Image 1 (spheres, rainbow, N blue to C red):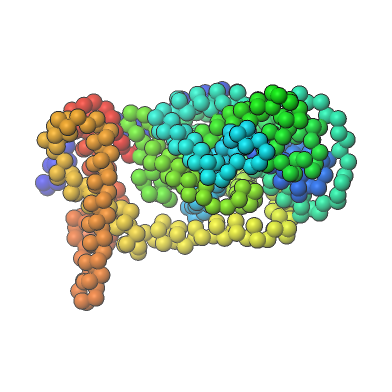
Image 2: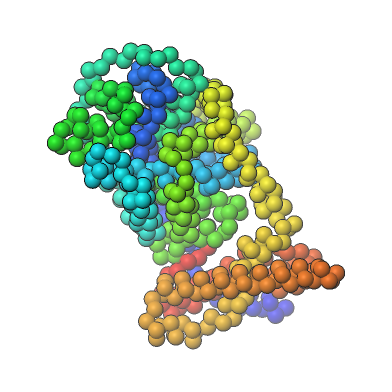
Length: 559
């Protein structure tokens, strides 16, 4: 009765905070083009030519890659307007196939795919920035990685500060990254070797890395202005433009360099500029740096929205679904992407990383397009603003299946590692997502931390503590950051203590202690993570309300 009375007397909570719709058609096009034309066109030509064996086959691979990307983009346009959620592939697969399929896609993306792609793009940025300083050799490894980390940290700060700043950077650097070379082909494309079908498939995997990103606008659908109109238009404009640019760029490469020179080059665009532009070759590293800088920004922007969507669906810790009240940016998700990328930066060689990522990426594309066909059969009468011909997904899936089969036969280790990375998510899903009521330790760490912290700090954080903070001269964000760190450390300490106490009770043969205060008052005595989430939300809303009354809006809230 008392609790009911308290709920009735509780003051009104602040207005719900959500992602803002700030992405128009121009910004949507630059997100797609900037994500595709990042580093791939400056890294992949070497790998494509190495596997293709000849200039002619390499050019055909690039043209075919653009055609297949166009087919896939048409399928994603239909899915994007039919299921208007942020999260792209993950949201569509989860909605159509269920939680396990969506979680596996999310697991591989968060664990390896997007951190690795960000690492590769940032390393390319650093290599081309430092190449003029080391004209006769490859730049040293340490300064290259330090510059990559600096770039990622700076762009993470930009994305945390403002969505508008992030999209403006994307606009400027995508427009500034155009091709500065004259295209006058003088080389006839004749066969030098007879590559196997498997080698051509691996060449296509290298090219598909350069085309990856055509689906990234689907990750931010909820932030697009009029998505049913602008999302398909942006896709229809961007993918053909990128295909044309890639084909002309490769013609320029092969017209000014021999195959041996291209394969021996550490920075293809720099070698191209030296051969073609002479004294003005410094323009090429600058243009590549501009392109890759915009690519890093685009990948950070979209991959953080994937983590945000996964947390909102309950497949990642709900901390990642929190949005800054003032800036409307998913800061925890951005910090996770930044941290995971810096870990990947210390592992692996660029071309090997591309092979792993390309296989996983291409596998996710096929599963998503297959979901489109299944959804057509499952929901035939559902209204679809855009409905592509069945030939489009069927042709895409046929080519996708052939490519995967030949890739498995040619590089079983690479493909096997990719499959293993995906399958490691199955036990995680079964333990932490599918049967959460049986994993008390996991939820005490993920959910219990928040509840302990909210119980402790919900009673101790009073108006007097805010007045003390004002007297010390702290701004509100610094105070709330220090408070959050203190809450997290205290909660983890209490969680560890509770786990050790429960273990000691079990050893003594006594019943495991589960009080109503720890379970949110559930009658059955089981650990209920939903109660933890409710306690955490109530605590954060009350804190935000107190700060709102004292200082005005600011801080964090659940999305």
